Image (tube, rainbow, N blue to C red; front, side):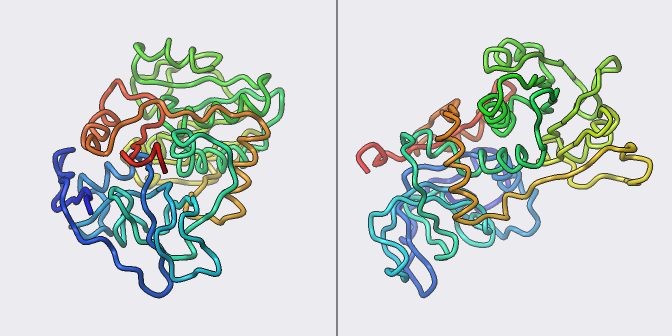
Amino acid sequence: MQAYVVNHPGGPEALELTTVPKPVVKPGWTRVKVLGFGINHSEIFTREGKSPSVQLPRILGIEVVGVVDETSAPDQLTSGQRVVSIMGEMGRAYDGSYAEYVLLPNSQVYPIQTDLPLASLVATPETYYTAFGIFNSLRLQATDSVLIRAATSGVGIAALKLIKAFNPQITVTGTTRRASKESALLAAGFDAVIVAPDSAKLPAATENFDKIIDLIGPLSAKDSLQHLNDGGIVNVTGELGGVWTIPAFDPISDIPNNGYLTGFSSGDVSEAKLQALFDFIHDYHVDVQPARVFAFKDVPAAHAYLQATESFGKVIILMDNAVTA
């Protein structure tokens, strides 16, 4: 089969399209024929050698939409059945979805009930599951003001869409480092945009908010906490700022009185939790179309786009066989 193998850290060119053996099904595992997958910032970090636990060479890819090709659990899964999978060390401890086939633990293969068209389905699993976890943590009210930091990211746009579908009265402000993206954010549905060239700090005159989604991560978490209204919640999920922990963090002084700090890990996943996401998308008519769709031959170009200053929203790959599958 064809797969993108990363043999050494590097730029998008480190993704080498290679012929490798099709994975062989073993007890406890299922082989999935790949229909498509999303491109994620964590995969860029891994490609660059910033994931110390990942041993190269490795086929990347932490999410996939596909069909069951062969399984060791025919009582649970059926050949040809459409399934999704995310996380569980896919693309990290073992080879991931940047390939024509991926071998997955049976416990990590999730049949999902949805009528989404394929491109929207492929855009959903990891990005919207993360955004949905953040959404649920915020305990949103119709009168809330919400700030999304790193709003142009895939999770940022997904969080906006979930919030506005749930209740369009909720005001949502987004941040971007570049003024050139302000019009695109407003067109996407944000009520206001803050241009914040310094990722670590909001501009001095920035108002406070009831809820803050901080996708920049530990780099800006302390600053976000200082922009909360009384009783507000900051959710720090993501590490787009390139910092993995909050330095010299003192909960007593850094979390304001009557303020709350939380996060979300998409590694906490189950079929029921994924289905709850797809049910929400259906019930609230959430638009989950991807921002950009690339072909399998263009995976390095998709990585380059996601890293570029002009990137916006969710980026996916559709396999050549996806249209007829």
